[in-house]
Image (cartoon, rainbow, N blue to C red; front, side, top):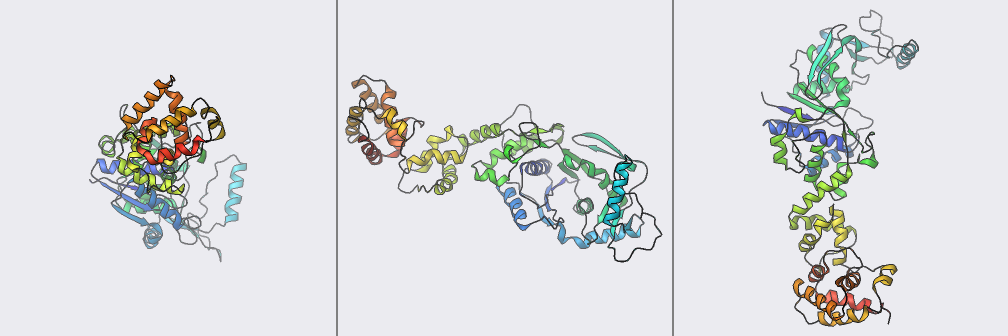
Length: 464
């Protein structure tokens, strides 16, 4: 049997962290077993589904590298198939038309609640001989078994049993002929030969209903694996403040896709104590039994750390390409400045994201004016003659990091001051900041002419 998994998002919003992790687990399971991974867009929510959301899902999948073997399939293009199966269930007395109005259903619900009962459809049209009322568009309901149990072995949660008398006769087709989620998803999984349904555990309650429909159709049941949800670091439902944003927002914030994938994989799944691993290693190690039954907690600091580990080992040319758009957004052009690949090589171990990398690189491509507090602290009468002398020395030396470093050391010795007494004012003059890599490395990359120009422009700010 070939393993066939699927990711089936509703296009009612962006691809978020929870959806991306579900897609990743489904993808990894298919790849591990040499199977097929299918993308299906469940767009039957006509009021909320948008083309923009569809594109956001496709963009997120592409950026993460979650390639699918078939699809994307769209449910609204399969309406004829759902109606065909609905007619089959109707003919076999496994479904029926229900003419209860919205007002009648609401009244029924209120009465049940008042009696302390669980609100559920009471089956009033299940075997009714009444004449259908005029002007009412009926829904089609499934004849759920009245007794017995539904039992399935969830690959993550273990054995789950639900009594059929806990389930009411769910709607298959709405009055406008559009299928409900529980009906369309069953037919799709059946037609697409899905062997393993891996999805969020918010669908656990739907599974017994779907199993009963599959049984009514004489279908082979897939295996089910319901993945616990992701919580915020505070243990509450994940919110935008705690990371529940579009996957593409992480792209815009400067995360590497492979780092985000690595982090998502570790949210509720583990392989020993491994923290950093490649996609190939994930596929090799992945198993549903290693997914935790408990909700995972989203930790932005851990994502930062993982992204930093990937930045450190990422090819400098690729990093430069990824950094360029961030610099451009800051109106910072790299033409005429030092080689950006060399700049990112110098900076990448000091940052967590590409956005931070771009921010740290700005002073290489345009002068940054230090604030008055930094000037007052470092531009002093005591250091002015040291900076003036260093400026003259810099005009004639070989422009390499080693020689620059030696010249700064010599100046410190001549003036009987510690190295930071020279390095810090020099750093502020040239970069406008106090936290940079070693100043000799910065100057070597920046170039002699630009260094001298920046030093010159600030010497008049020194007292004395």
